[in-house]
Image 1 (cartoon, rainbow, N blue to C red):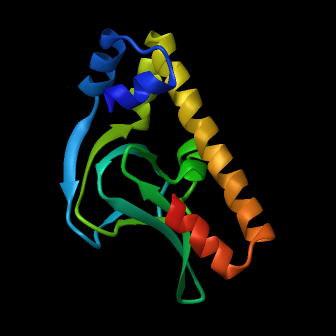
Image 2: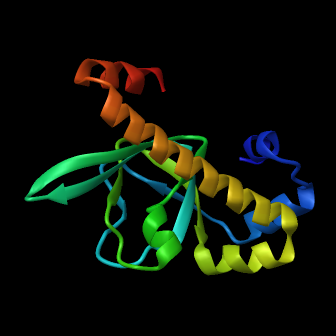
Length: 153
């Protein structure tokens, strides 16, 4: 995680130590739920290993919202930011290991460290760009092209 963060911004060892100090390291087996839509999302995870699927259930059918790949952060961002009830389930598609961060702990660190606040901004920017790219893909590509784009990522 440290190297990945440092590839995105100038990030000191001290900032990394602060971040890790509030992390809980966890593991989950395949097909386990990490996020539920019935309450506000108060955590964000950094996926070290594994693959996650975010989905909604509409009229009893699952609709994939997003895939989360190892090496970046995952959450129900809308719920995380608004503190309103979540809208998506996020589950493991394979065994996963991750760091979990509570929102309140992150907000406290943002007040203490400009580098950590910048990391929060970068995570939010990447989430926004992923949403915009997904919307463009949905509007501009047929099913075969969408599948090919997914396989490239």
